[in-house]
Each structure stands twice: as C-alpha cells, then as structure tokens.
Image 1: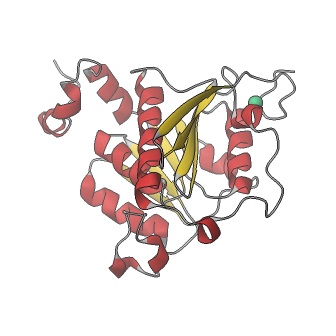
Image 2: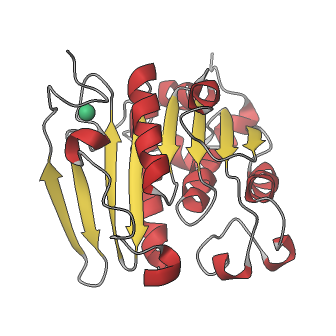
Length: 251
Ligand SMILES: [Zn+2]
C-alpha cells in the first residue's frame, strides 16, 4: 500500500519514476518544513521548485514589495503585483502551482532578533537573501539551531552555492570568516544581475535543498561551487571546518 494518494502519484510521477527517487523520498518531502529567506531572484526558482516537488510546508520571508526593476529576474512576481508584498505575491503563485503545499508568508526581514522564532519547527533553511548582514545572521542562527542550510549568492553573471549541515560540515563562516567591508561589494542595483544567472544559481540551490531533504544524491557540503556564467566555468572549492569558527566551532 502506498503512503501517497493517487493524485500525488500522478502529480509527482515524473520524479517518482527516476531511479534515484523513491516513495520514501517523496514522503520525506511531504513531511518537511522549509523556510525560504528572500522571495526575489534566487527565492523565485527555489520556492517554485520546492513547491512543485511537493515540500509539505514552505515559509516565505521577505520584507520588500515588488518593484518594476525586479521583474526581469524574479519570476514569481508579475506586473500587476507592483507594490504588493513579495512574500504575499510569491505565496499566491505558489498556491496556484501546488495547492497541497502549506505556504506561510512572513513580511519581515530576518535578523538576529527574530531568527530563532522563524527557524522554530523548520527542517531546512534556504538563504535567498541579497545582503551580507542577513547571510551571516542566517548562518549563525542555523548553526545555533543545528538546522541544515543552503547558502547562495548571485551578482552580475556569477554566483556561489554551498550546502551546510551545521556541526557536521563547514559552515558559511568557515568559508568566509568575516563579511566584506561595508561598501566594498556592489549591490545588484549597482553591479546589475542577469535573470538567467540568478535562475541557474537558484536552481542549483533548490537541487541542494532536495538532496538534503531526501538523502538522494550527494549534497555540496564541505565546500562551495563558484559559477561564472559568462564562461560557464564551474569551480568546486573545498572548505574544511574551522575549530575557531564563531558560528559552528565545536569548542
Ligand atoms: Zn563554521
């Protein structure tokens, strides 16, 4: 007897038929709660693929509203959504995509003060934020909670992806000990970002999230993938845990 309904067997048939996938993997996704931090360029592909794949509960954290300059790369938002909170705009589209997924929008910016509350009850966090402050706050909170995490960033035509099992594999801070000095890294508004570049990085992030949730495949842990989309160079950089890491060091 299957733990999946007939409707689920049909909806997820093209992944269930994969030799790597299984009913156990599908049931693990259905039982999972995932927090997606940021409903923008990375959050759009991440949330779309996770909702489509059948993650049971998806929290969407974003404090911003939809602006016209977002639309070339943030495909969960459409022109009629201008001025609408991104968390709500994203939740509406994800509900159309897969009504079986419980979508919880949070119109806040994740910071050190609210992180523990937002992380409570989650099985995985996917960081799709666009600020170093949020990225370091997310890493610290996930390490403190022992919550698996998929980090990523994209700027211009390049990006980075890293999967983290706190306490077991290198964390973001093991790889990048300190945030870059204020103003030393341009923002997306200053440096620009190409839609498909964000799509590639976000898709890789969704893939890593599915691996961590189901145990299918080999997650990108103890290192990160550096991607240059102008040359299509994919470089995997190994990172070891640091005993003196302030976030995950096991002192
Ligand atoms: Zn660390």
